[in-house]
Amino acid sequence: MLRIAVPNKGSLSEPASAMLHEAGYRQRKDRRELVLVDSANDVEFFFLRPRDIAVYVGSGKLDIGITGRDLLLDSGSRAEEIMQLGFAGSTFRYATRPGTAKGVGDFGGMTIATSFSGLVTKHLADHGVDASVVHLDGAVETAIQLGVAEIIADVVETGTTLRNAGLEIIGEPILESEAVVIRRAGAPVDDPKVQQFLRRMQGVLVARRYVMMDYDIRVEHVERAVSLTPGLESPTVSPLHHEGWVAVRSMVPAQDAQRIMDELYELGARAILTTGIHACRL
Image (cartoon, rainbow, N blue to C red; front, side, top):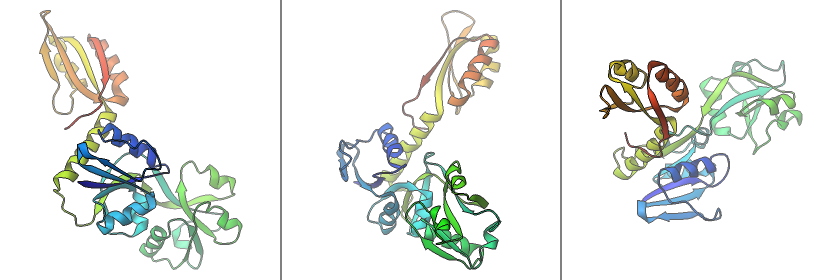
């Protein structure tokens, strides 16, 4: 039975559960439930603190897990990223009061406050900077005001919270993070249970990005039409009962669907339909 770690709370929890549901896995009915056995899919889910997931997976106690790239790297555990999941995107950056520093090269002798001390310590070492790191759990922007540190390192979305605290973002991003699937470093890559899980998750990602488009087009316009809807490999083209017309079916990127429909209509296509894709295997 495949043992999978899933975030039990925070910004990773709901999107991860939604994705697992779309992939056909059983969902827990009570948020207080810490272990869920999905016998039909031969999977056992463990609902853990996102920050702890990399530790459990890296130790080999659990086979794979869903967590943030920032939490994985900060943990220092023997786990590695094997799939990007496309949600919970964030940027990890430094911030300070205006005029304090321009970038990481100016941090020598200063103190940096962060909730990701492992990640920041490594980043400073990679840049050859000798600075102190203070670990805080949350609300690190107050560390400068209270004199605990001159610099902070934190997740930045819009930057509004930092500006309201009188701080400015400096230097290049430390890390671009998102939700990822992880496994123990060095674990077999061809484990069939892991591969099946990854195929399911990849199927969800594709289903979210694409729609199925169907339309009728005259034979003489088929080549131009299918150039607009090439599909992943090749579209399906079938003759219609009405001579001189064919039906075309193809997957197209959801974000481009309306534009493609307009161009097909101008080309003479009719009965243009788009339908959502709930699951797929490629």
